[in-house]
Amino acid sequence: MPGLNDIFAPVAASVAVGRIPGAVLAVLAPDGTRQTIAAGMAALVPDRVKMTADTWFDLASLTKVVFTTTAILKLVEAGRISLDDPLTVAIPDLRQYHVGTAPERGLTFRQCLSHQSHLPAVEPLYTYGQDPQTLRAFVLQREWIAGPSVYSDINFILLGIAIERLTGHALIDQPVPAGFSFRPDPAICAATEACSWRGRVMRGEVHDENAFALGGAAGHAGLFGTADALLSFAAGLLDGSALAPASIAALRTPQRFDRGLGWQIPHLGWSGGDRCGAATIGHTGFTGTGLWIDFSTGRAWTLLTNRVHPTRHAETGIADLRRMVGDLVYA
Image (cartoon, rainbow, N blue to C red; front, top):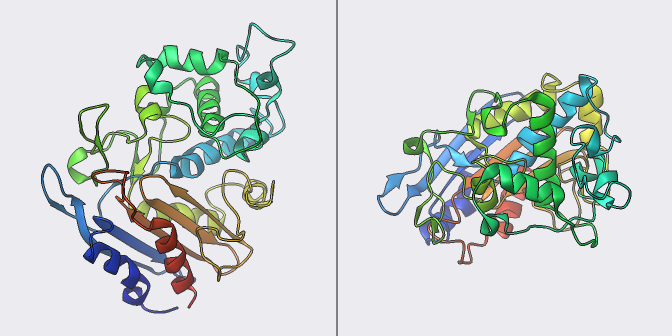
């Protein structure tokens, strides 16, 4: 593996020319050693804050895999549900006024985890109100127009509601490992967008509008964390301490050409680059985050950026940057 500075070179160049404000790269080597490097700024406005290796990031859709997928698999391990149970075993009031006809009542945990439902990619729930419980009820009772299977935030919002029902606790109050939080200290966080809807730069508050309106945490977004925490999570999957062997095998088993349970698997043009092995899983987050884990070599890496700061409406080249970093990890 090349040196960390070599792997980080395209990221540093992107920071230098102002395409992204800052970034942290952390790599877990097959021998268990870790290296972390940071560059740029955690915030540009309203105040300039330097990026450090310990900066906390809004992990965005990494919430789907680090928290939600893991929580569902632990509930399976505990015998509370099975992957092929319908969501109604946890959410009996899902489309409760259309018990015999609503397709949502037949959706399974496996279908939602692997994005094989008929649900849309996203819906601007926050435009319908800001009361979290009313929005949850709206999600559960809405007639979702059937469409092709797509990568869907709604799938994971439903899974988040199921976790809340099965555990008896709101997502924002769920226990998470050290280095992760649904309520981080804003002073140690990278800033995300200067949000026109909320009228402020988001820092230490979830960037995703729907997760914000649902109370600050949802099944698809809301988790914050550090690069080191992500490597610890990856190490737990690699050494089998995070989940039972059957669960780890399940999340890696292809459910469609590009996905296992929650996680992406290598396919043409995917975010992990072209050089990783077939036993790799990965996921990205809209704010500029990503995590990849290679079970064949015991290697993992995370690239965390605040590419939406101060606006998402800019071309940052994040897709190409992620693939370049992945290829360099294996150079």
